[in-house]
Length: 149
Image 1: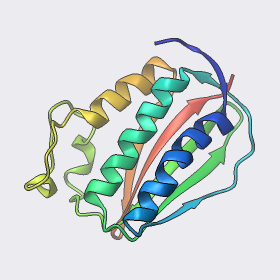
Image 2 (image 1 turned 135 degrees about the vertical axis):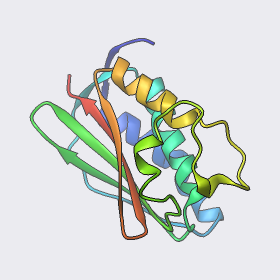
Image 3 (image 1 turned 30 degrees about the horizontal axis):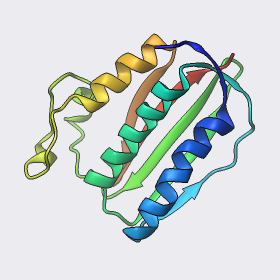
Image 4 (image 1 turned 90 degrees about the vertical axis):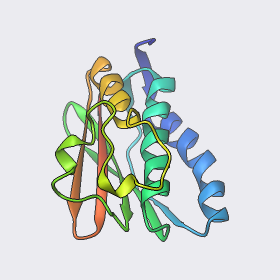
């Protein structure tokens, strides 16, 4: 891991550049919220890896209708939330999704190792950030918290 500084816009461009086309092909609406560009602390490549993993999970486990990137800012951090509908994860499973090798009951016929979100949490913490998830109705939101530089 190479901890340094990078602009939020660089991270957003890498994610949206890849996923706009991919999501258009599967007919998923992809909305990117407004954000104020700023310098973040961390490793750009690992940050891309984290957001890609969250996006891929949203594609695998969501209903495929809509995904959204939502940005919020505080004094010391920027939160990037990835929201998608069609959540099939049970509320009792939510506290476990960042555990290694853990897979929810909703993964029965879907391939995976149960390591993706665990690795994301490790990477975020090494970059002095965090990651968490919330469920409201059938919408799951996974949020990565990045430290400002």
